[in-house]
Length: 491
Image: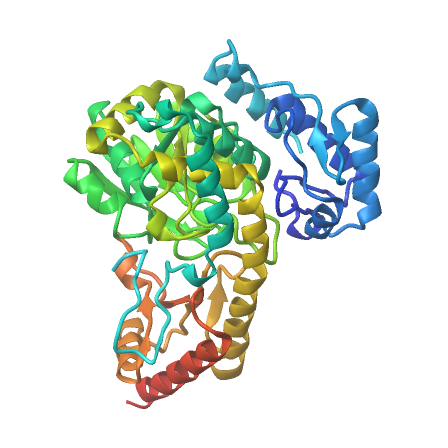
């Protein structure tokens, strides 16, 4: 059953859900969640927990509630207090898949435990006074000093053997660091042996499509609308038929999956691109049931899950069915696309083939960059960078919503709770293409939803990327759009 949005919380750096309707004390719920993560192996021995103030702020509770939960777990031996005030995991029970158990048994255990309660990346375009191009990250905020510290550590401490040729999966240090992070923050069930490092999501989805085609896949399902610059193009080039699954307010419409007769499905369940819908718990469970019935693979593109503002994030689908879901992540939206760092958590039966495809493609991603990111993650610098950036992007998002309310109140914003862009649906009297064209005449760069639809038609909408714009530029851009819309209505 899906929990009420108003009665659940999730800390920024630790996956914890609170249900304020159960009558169970909040500190007991926090204890139970952390205890379960340790027992399941999502939090391993030595992993650092967020400071009590940080966790309390993320969950919307008093610090005393978190302190009480931590103290109880310390008393039980699950946590240990360290010098300097740090709290770390003192006991860990790895999931079966980390040892002798199978991925299938791990998935079954996870399912049982959860049953209860144009292009995406657009560079700066010239010729516009204001450009709402999406898919852009504020690289001016890249944490250079912290990254440099990690580079120095890598260059002075890495053994010589790491600079030789490695297998196609990448360096073990990054595998472990990513597993620790993803299991803690995104609720995955990742193990180092199933990690493959790639050059961003673009290469990752290319490798997956190649492998799926060699395994006999003939048809791939994509969300409709969806990006045009990766899976859609690559699937066609690999000889796969592409079929669109309609997207509603809450993400892909799962009742259309059986009619698609697909062998694989590419999803953005935590924040559908571009509409911003969040796939419900019930819909996620139905997607997993579909994948198991068909023996299909679900590709989970978790492209901007770290940036959420008004609601609690939801855990990754991979944690529900690691034998059927490929989890794809990237540093492009969180740090900088120029790093070309991406990662996949791949079902065990596909790991060897995906690693072989990666090795054939480029002999592996750069070792120094991988080791640097592993150190950056291990030091907690990635968490700190995200905590710094969330309020920055939130202020820009708020400036956009305020400007829309002031100048264009008949546009309906959607997908506002997360990410680095907002979609605004147009009223029926406005033609999307006409608005985009008129906006360009007034020096405003903005794109519509229409070019990203696969088969169906739908309401007109505009995509507002706000990540690299100042609040004043955002206000100016919306004012320009209002002028363009008045022109369209008057013509």
